[in-house]
Image 1: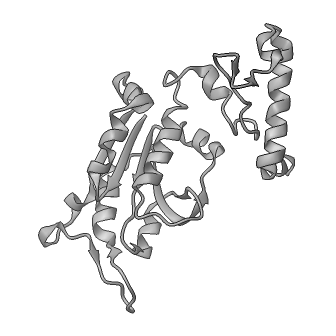
Image 2: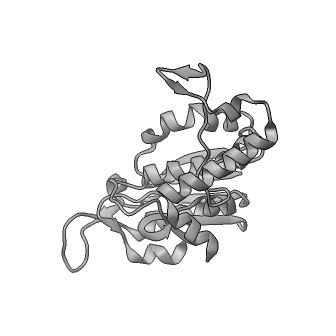
Length: 224
């Protein structure tokens, strides 16, 4: 898989690309991730990419031309172009699982007051990672990239990804490790029993219980 991320702040991705699962996936050549400063596609003096909005208003707006020139240069027949924005589809695990089947993702990070509306004509999918405001699209781009890369075969232990929260519309079951007792708090006996059938039943019941308590909306979605 190849992921191209268009941003005005490429240095924000330095730690993201050089740690943990992302680093290992790159080293294994499971994914190629390119961080591209789309100022390089500007034809204006000083590589300018923004201007004041027509009709007045606060802030600066990202121009069409440098963003679309970047898309035109990078897009292939098998590319999916993603725009990170508050108006996009709310990101979920089910979306990540669809994205991991693409060979090439282009993710555009916004900044300033917003995009020239015409940029939307050149993208395939708009994604929001939640109903709150961020300074720019870099953090959403990292979230999308991380959630997709970990699903690529070989990036992590397959059992780890299949047991994750949201894979079956349920939150993950509680996990424990040594010591078996800490300050009077004990690991459930069933997990120490060695009875794998009972452990599996316990974990499923705990998933359902947790989901009912903390995210009942997930159960509602499952029944739709």
